[in-house]
Image 1 (cartoon, rainbow, N blue to C red):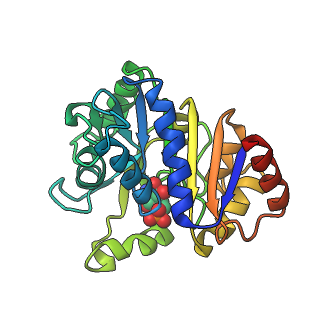
Image 2 (tube, rainbow, N blue to C red):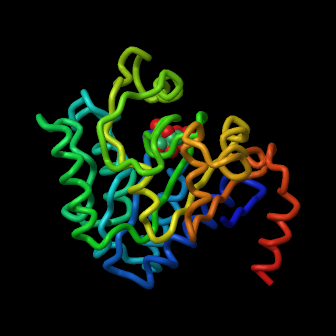
Image 3 (spheres, rainbow, N blue to C red):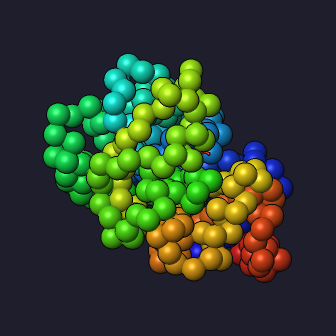
Length: 256
Ligand code: GLP
């Protein structure tokens, strides 16, 4: 795992966007794995800036979102289908036909999950997957206890996740209780993973993911099993890392 510690959240977005843009310039018909939540928003803004400046063309790139709520319509502006359309597909000038979100409104949720896996496979799998991390160490909506072998499936959200996401809704009671999410096994199949975290509220989850044991209690610790995983954090999110001097040295050498 490569760990990059940068002074500010803006630096995190810029460096992460450059990695992602670099991977997709080499593969104009590649597949981008999309995360929701607040962590990747500045990455999307930076990618949009590159697209507007004609430095990047994502019109042939497919997108697959990590997860979706169950129990709210697509027209709810907090559904991930709506968030991805608003924050990603439009600003990044992606083709809406090529951007996929799990169908949390399907009558048969289990079939919708299986179909999602098949669609991803038909596109050749994800080339670069953007990830945030929950305060409890979740990736996608894989809550603590999720199997590292899990696939896209129907899950119940942890109370902490519902509380963390209440800020996006009018009232805490409006936060859905269930979701569909790519599994940890699904996420680990992406060719490259880029996880970003900003702020002190993420410091303990980042330390557990990067330096803690491999454990389903911290789903993001599964990144330790991946050949090409990069974790890009600001200094506040890096505050509890024991080896931060080493990571900074390694990054410095890689840039020289
Ligand atoms: C959300 C999403 C995750 C995201 C995480 C952190 O609920 N399902 O994909 O990475 O929780 O969210 P945020 O970036 O808003 O802190």
